[in-house]
Length: 216
Image (cartoon, rainbow, N blue to C red):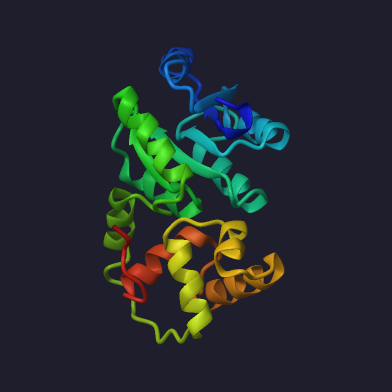
């Protein structure tokens, strides 16, 4: 497969055996290109600066800079990078924080190689901004929050639906035949009206308020 068509992935995990195991899995799939291995969140950010991957597999508990803070900083700088949390335990508090920070999903470290690759491919293609599992976690947390009277224009609703489907601003621009600056303007308006600062927050709040339906 042409290198340009491969999904560029960085692994951020402080355990060499975990990184080696995932690397071994990826070697069996031509669609995946492992371009970097980071031992902490700081290294992951530095690698993203140089390598601009499509996907980052992010451990939550790491030295120097943990996965939640690293996710926050990465999404602020490169919102189109899709971050999948990689965890060996079912720590809902940390998982919720990472999803709020902008991660699109999470997987446990005992996931099968085939399922991990499928998850990466699905998320990279934009099938979902949030996995259904991650969406349930966030919607559950928001179940007691007050309802908002949110008024979106027809164009803003159209763009919000595409955000839910996982499309980046560039992809939305192509789909709707709009300029990048116009899409950015509408996305900013959507975030402002929903009272959030990140796309993933907009998605799960929109789903909670039933502004759009979860695709699939």
